[in-house]
Length: 169
Image 1 (cartoon, rainbow, N blue to C red):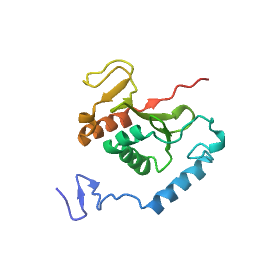
Image 2: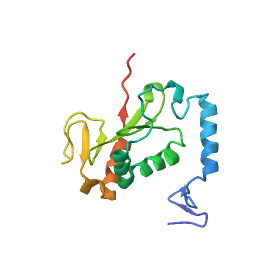
Image 3: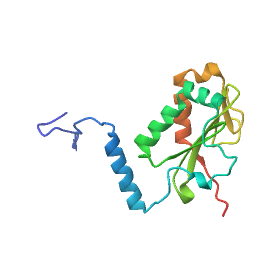
Image 4: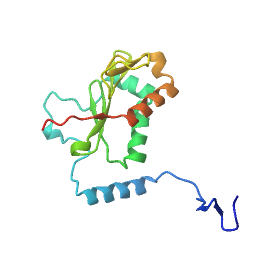
């Protein structure tokens, strides 16, 4: 029961609502984090460091599937709201890679396109109980990736269990 002081069971009640950060606030938080970490890591690979044959843009077929599935919008929202813009997106001819963390904590989510199938690399190498699992990959047909609920569930699983980069050290 709540008393006169707004407490219930001895704990003060939290009043108010959560809100998302404005673009300016998000940039301020990102700057504070980078300053605190003394991180000078660029958010993208400088063009002069790329191999002449490297691609930094999605091919047209992959871009069509990535756009229609809305997976990129969800990954960008995750980067903005939970990673404070500290993630890095790398585009390749056939897919997108979201990386975050440094050193031993480096994690990533890899989304690629093969034909008209959307592929999520997974953190496990054995077949799981999901019908679209092919060992270390979850393969979605066009009928599946047009279902936003299904894509959001997969992204939630991917964000809970991102792929940990193995150290070569």
